[in-house]
Image (cartoon, rainbow, N blue to C red):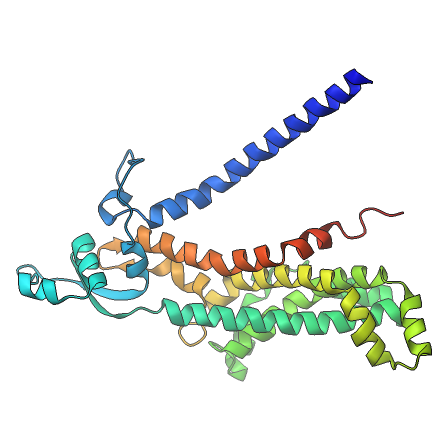
Length: 314
């Protein structure tokens, strides 16, 4: 028995070590992006790269600003340099550029937030109602309907890009928030229906029957009994839907140009007057990761429970 316990202990530590190693390997790209975002302009393309350097927030300033290079012989005087704002002086010292105006990142960031949050809310509302209907009522041809809903996830988006582009141009939904919201909701609602149906199926019907015996209507039963029991599934589904919408690139690139353009479609094309600004691109990537990371951390308990829900049966 002692040898068996010892073998299990060794196996346990080996698994932990392997998981730690895998985690470190998977975190290397993220570390590289964060590291690049804080490197001074002159050291970003150095080879071999220096491991020790003085961090700079110049890349974060550049991603938030539009700039132009000072013409030869027209560099600012000592007096003009002293009168500059601190961030303008930092940009000048880094890249010899003049800050012209605020950049487009705040607008693109707001577009991404509006579209992703609205899509998530609509998808969760529609998906929860549809999942409840399939779970609790006898729907004629239920299997066919569920397969049809699931089949929308099998279709590669690139196949329907051209028809959707032509249709959106005809009805005037190109470069609009509502256009992307409707499109993202249509693609994500099938995922929400299938995931949430599994959660609702696990809720005993006896709870609802007891509530209706006490005088609750079907809607009150759904709102006061089913929804509280489905919070874990709803939270887990919301995280995935938000990440899908937040990261989507193909449709955002093809269907938007200015008004509703999101960060994924805008960030890869930040060519500065000095060439592609890898530092600013890295800084934008770090800022872009924050909302999804924060949402995942806040809902991590629901997310873990949601992924493992129904895995262990008594």
